[in-house]
Amino acid sequence: MPTGIAQSDSMLTSSIRMSDHRPRVKFVDSAVQVLVSGQPPSWFAPTMTRLTELSYLPARWDGYGARPIQSSLINAVVKWLITLMPNDIPAPSVVPTTPGGLQFEWHMHGIDLEIEIFPDFRWLSSYEDTLTDDPWESDRDGGRLWEALRELARRSTR
Image (cartoon, rainbow, N blue to C red):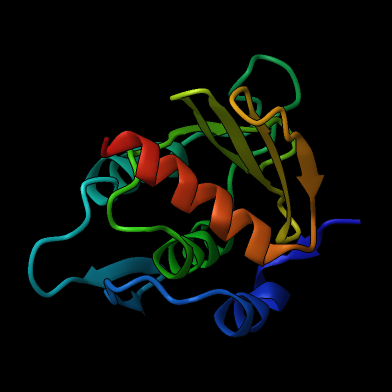
């Protein structure tokens, strides 16, 4: 069973090294306000823009029964990403899921990494590396996810 973001915030903070950027997040009238001193990481603006776009999806956005993405999920995800993402990682593709969740994807440099965030704040990550043939799927190992993100960032800056 996937671990929750709300539950994993403290777990991620204690089990993974914090990234060196520390934007502050505060909530104003149900909106996320992110304060960044200095230059934000390159993934930040495109990811926040996409999350904003997805926050406007109506119910049944897929023409069937897809649920909208709740602002509480987006707020939690923003804080989670700021804690988790390395500065030098490329921006992910961000797609909505029909139950009202979000999926973050990277398919580059021989790495396929996907992180699905469920509407109830659980998360699941899957990873495949064509260079090492080391696939895995996890809902509890924040350290392993951090290492996958770092490897993707490392390969992206070569």
